[in-house]
Image (cartoon, rainbow, N blue to C red; front, side, top):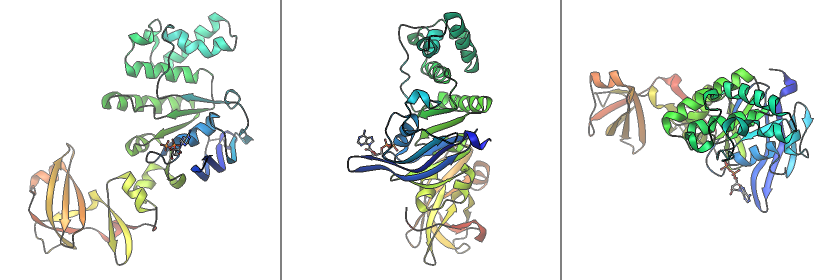
Length: 330
Ligand code: ADP
């Protein structure tokens, strides 16, 4: 965690004509951190990433890498590399030569660039596929090759734009774990754009939630989940009830909701609307007497020891310390 390796954004703004895509954001990503930029479509994540990469000009503010202002540097001089969502591998080159390509451009001799490509393929567990062409690889394998290719220039910052979105859920989970392992092994900063809060929670040391061109909250995923700053963050992270209580807006984790058979017993009376089995847990949607919607998540075994059915009247309760107050606004 050496400060001289940080990526720092200072008042960074991106405007496309009248559209302000990124609105004066400040962010420091520390050396060695896995950072996820998270938020709904159009919130400015990709624009932020592309400005760091140098694929998009900066309208205002400064970007620093290792204490050096890089706004005007060409992409190749920034020490960054980008792994694209579309793998964009060369169809006529085999895996090894695809990975070695950037070194060929730099004029590195064949034997050396092939040796270095093989090291990189080892890192992404693709040594056995060195001689295959892209069409002979699965989507997940192509992804690994694209990752190896991006890492070949020995970047100090790897930028990833929705790298897992084209994969099926099983592969996505495996590749996610691989990304985290490789990031740890290399010890470099990864900045990963995603709209999936699950992905960000699984990967990030630093999760940055954006909305409408601004950073709403940043921190370790657990902090964002347990102490969302606004109702927007709570909704986006999921798993929370957002309620009005004594004129305040508060959140309550769905898994902190307690249900009882006695409708009089809790703080609210509600009717079970529907029940969704999800394996390890069961989700219940409730409608309170006052017309609020609430969600409760019960561990599978707890639920089935005395299952509730749609239409049942229940008492809804919670511990006072599970109520978390959030700031008004987005
Ligand atoms: P995200 O990655 O979070 O989906 P983007 O950074 O791609 O968001 O886009 C942020 C905003 O900027 C959106 O309103 C989008 O329509 C707009 N935008 C992005 N790229 C361009 C562009 N090249 N020209 C004009 N508007 C753009």
